Image (cartoon, rainbow, N blue to C red; front, side, top):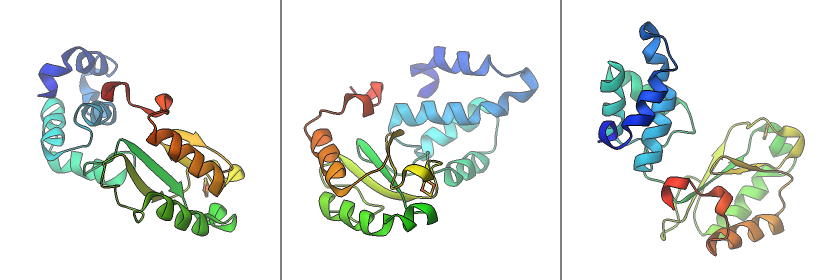
Length: 169
Ligand code: FES
């Protein structure tokens, strides 16, 4: 249970909010739960709802709204490729096709070895450096097919320490 395993961190998060505003801690607690379980499982969402005295459906709707929360298990490396308009104008569609070919999965899928999840996402606020990707929330700008291949090969060799959630090591 999150409450037992991460008690100190939960306490520290809750201490940042006034007693009548505890519900505002929902996002950091969801991050914590996701870090612990790898994704926002129904159990994790229920626990967060209990801690904050929220309705579980409220918590679920937050998880469903924000792309940084995962409702299903994901790979060790989550690769988000922006295919919004400015990136599309700089070749994002062709780039996504390349990413799919390189990883052997379609956008939205995880490689069979559980290492990579590929997703397309809306603007991630770096349009001037398109095409842009995020790997476990680390930005990579001005991507090319060659730089993507290089990055994926390095991560496949476990040579991507800066991308690894410390809890997964
Ligand atoms: S449209 Fe891709 S980063 Fe903004």
